[in-house]
Length: 482
Image (cartoon, rainbow, N blue to C red; front, side):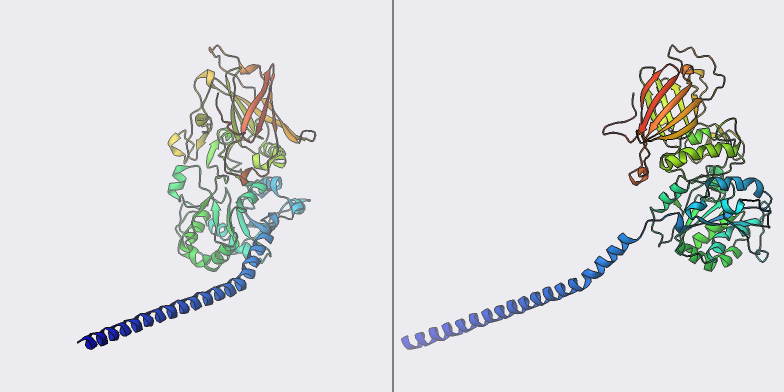
């Protein structure tokens, strides 16, 4: 019995040892295989990363080396008519810069007589292609809309080289070209982009579309999108014979291509009548890109012609295009006044304290597109012209602007616009004693490289017949408060 017990115990111990040894070997094999797998993957990853790295560096280098968009990368397509050409070509001369190698075509319906010197101060003139094969069935419009809607495609077919953007405008559109370039540099010209803005008229936007860019206010189309448009536009136009104008035909084709409108507030259609003062004095916090319908509204400066007024505006435009029309709001605490500076255009002095929330809204100095004083007709907030005689602003228009080389600042003068002011019974200092306002401002070409924010203004002095104001980037903790 003892020998039997010893035999059974020995057999059990040997079997157990073999089983443990087998499992240990298997685990070592697994560990070894895993180690080999990890080592192999690390080697492959290392090889892969080594092979990919130069490509990534090359792509990053190419992106860095690609130059920023400039005027030389833009081709303008200007819609014009022979009937109005003699008058409206003067608007184009205000902003066209042949010395900066600008490129563009004025597309006319008929040949026009050219004057001496026009060739040097205007874009090339061409006659639009025949559109008689296209149906037009809108009784309220004019079939010239078909001709104008094809301007981008016709310009593309000319085969200009090194083009990134096609920009559309009318012959009564004035461009601030430096700001146009600033806007376009925000976007990748290799992608599909349709950039512009809606009308100021709520009813116009409802009738046409809030998704439509208005050609008079100007719009930009990237080169790849223009190529896609050119391939399908003629067939697209045939599908919409009942549309009214050129802009809605363009937007219909954009809808078929699936490209939405990218809105930029600086493109201005100005579907209004009367005085633009309220809109310009409270410009949105965005670069001013275009002005339109200049034959419909009053001259932007009083007592001069429309062209003379716009020529005056080009002076501050050249000094600091980024800051043109930008509003600043501050307070003259000593006199109890509210000051609004629309740089390069006008200064307003109000009695009392008005909040920035109120001042930044345009005052309704204009009528809507249907010549009615209807505050519900606009696609933005407005405020009524003050009825209280004490709250009527004293307006000072730009009279001159220059660069002071000693301080490296712009110095602009604003002279009071003398119109009758009703008597005010408030016991406050009367702004009527002020004849002129002098504004100091450093040129700030990188204003729109930062997040949007109004500049701040500070009243430096307000004694006697003059006031001195400083405008510039807001300091840490600075805001518009009394």
